[in-house]
Structure formats: C-alpha cells, structure tokens
Image (tube, helix red, strand yellow):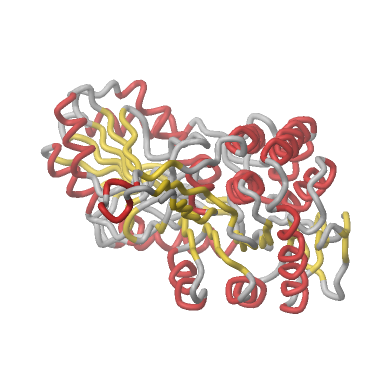
Length: 474
C-alpha cells in the first residue's frame, strides 16, 4: 500500500483525513490519498487564481512545449499508468493500455492546438456605421477552471479537460473520482516534471457533495467542465451561478444493423462496444436494433462471440472483462436484468454476478419501458431488438431522453443520409457503433446527454472568451 500526497499550488500536501483506494478485483487497499474539504478546495482555487495572472502571459510555443513533454512522459510511464488503471478502475489490461495511448495522443493534440488559437477579422464596413473602422477578435483564456471527472477513464477524461485548459492559458483545479484518484496524481507528477508552473494544475480529492460542490460554487472559478451522470449534471446547473459550464453526461447508446450489413464484421465490433470496460462507458453499446430478416442469425452469432470472452483479473493480459467499479453497482445492474426477465425479456447469455463481477449479458425481446432500455445501464448488458423498417429503427433510437452518439451499419447511401438527417444525437457513426471516438473530433450530446463539446480544439473554444477589438481610422 502506498500513501500519496495531493498537489496544491505546486506543492505536495497531506490532510488529516484520507480515502482508501482499493483494487477493484481483489478488494485490497492499494493506496491512501488525502481527503480534501472546503478549506483545501478554496486554497487550490486561490493558488490557481494567483498562477493565472502570469500563466495567461506565457507564449503559445512554451505552453505547447510543456504539453508535448507531458505527452512524452505519459508514454514513458505507460506500463505503470496502465497497471494503475487496471487496479484502481478494474479495467482490463488491453483497454487500460489503450486509454494510456489515447491520453498521450490527447496531450499531443493539445500541444499542437496551443499554437493554433486565433480569432478573425470582422468586416466592419458591412454596416454603414462601421465605415472607416477596422475590427477583429481574439480568443483569451477565462481564468480558473473547475474540472470534475468520473472513474471510468481516469487518465483520458482528465486529459480532455486538463490539456485544453493548459493549451489555452487557463489554470485548473481537478476533482477526480474518489474511487480512481491515483492516475490523476501520477499526471500531476508528470506535469510538474514537464515544467508546468506552480499553481496552474491542482488536485482535490473527496466526495462530490462536499468537494465537488465547493469547487462549483466558488466565485473565482470561471468555468466548470464535468463528465458524469445526468442527475449530477442537473444539480451542477442549479448551483453553479453565472459561469460557463460544459456537461458530458450519459446515454443509452444504440446501433442499427440493417439487413444489407456485413454482420460478420459488425458482430465483433458490437461485442467489443457492449462489453469493453464492463460496459462502463458513456457511449457503450446498450441497444442493438437488428432488421427482422437477420435478427436470429445476428443474435446466435453475437451470443457465441460473447460466450468466448474471458472474465477475470484485469491485470492478466488476456482478460476481456474485469469487475465493475463497486459491488453496489453490480447488484443494481443484476436487479435490472432480473426486472427485464420478469417483464418478459429473454436472457440469451450471462446474467450471473459474483461480487463486483457481472458476466457479460445479452437480452432479447426487451421493451422500451424496461430500465435496461430506457435508462443508462452502465454495465455489461446489451439488448437486441428487432425492427421492421429503417424508419422504425431511427424512431426507436430517438425514443430516448439521451442523444450522445449512435451507430448505423448499412451500405445504402440513402439510408445513411436519412439517418444523418433524422437522428437526434451529437454523433452518427456509419458502419461502426456508438462507441467510436477519436480524441480530436467534436464530442458531446443532445438532450440529457449534455451541453457543449469536447475534443481538444472544441474544448479550447469552450474554455476561451472572445475579445472584440475595433480601431477607428476616421
């Protein structure tokens, strides 16, 4: 077991109280981290506010160099970080390694985008009142940003907030998930070694109701960027006050398999999309709508592929699924499965739980009023549903409070464009599933799936203010 300090104002500090971090597979305590309170949150915000006065003046090339150095250090420590993610998040080794690679890439993108932040000219003489004047705008950093991140991507979802903030000249106070804080502290070590000035990056760890809300309501924090549940996101909009807010919330993601699809290509991708990280991904595949003519064949092959997955210790490199984040979440998901079966769903594969480990589960004959369908399941559970027409399938996907991303498998260009025009989601993935994401594309949802967009360039736009300049030449 290792005892960590947290990072405030460029210093490593301890607190009187600590939080145990457990190995999600074995249940053993692997670390103790400092538990913050409102006083420490205020101290972190004050440190960030003080640092901002100098950091906002740092030239873009220097911010870029720091981010590039941080990216290189992430790569150098990739095995250490991947093992940390395996143990504190329960994520299988292959997905933990993938997350580290994405974290590296996100910092690389940010190092590049730091040198591309610019405004544009405004044609002042488009108005009679603007004749003889020159106008342009620039983008300027906002100040202190408060970031709150979840457990499921303890490096890359942190990177999506921290790296663009640094690139755009902001300072940041991060509250990582209390169940997976070690990776964030390793990132603090990396940023310190990369030469980030003191106070630019700060970490506070603790429960959302105390630490998170103290951060959100602090008047010196100019923007909140949050990834988590819709329920918490709604709460943050109520208490944040007048500050900008980006919310990356949940989804009950769907993918449509049309009858002309190559199902032998679609099935392994769908299996991976449904069960990666034990289904604990915002864009994890939860609903599969399959044309009735191919539904039996698809279900049979999907079930066989699911049965081949290895469930076990995430540190073992051939494991496909590890545990869920805690036993209560696994119990909750198990209850949803039983509820669906009692309401008439067919259990095709899985459904069994042992502690935090829930077997990958495939359901059929589910209906939209079942919680496994209408709510975000955030577990290794997927439902296969038949449909008659492509238009019906689009309606089924849209019949949701969420709208993050959706996938379509078809080679019919008319249906592709129909889907693009009619799906009420933030991203449409053609011949792929809802889970596809690369880290420079705009990412975010509609309806209860959130407000704003991430993806490094787009996050920078959310983290900067436009300053208009007019020069009177008359």
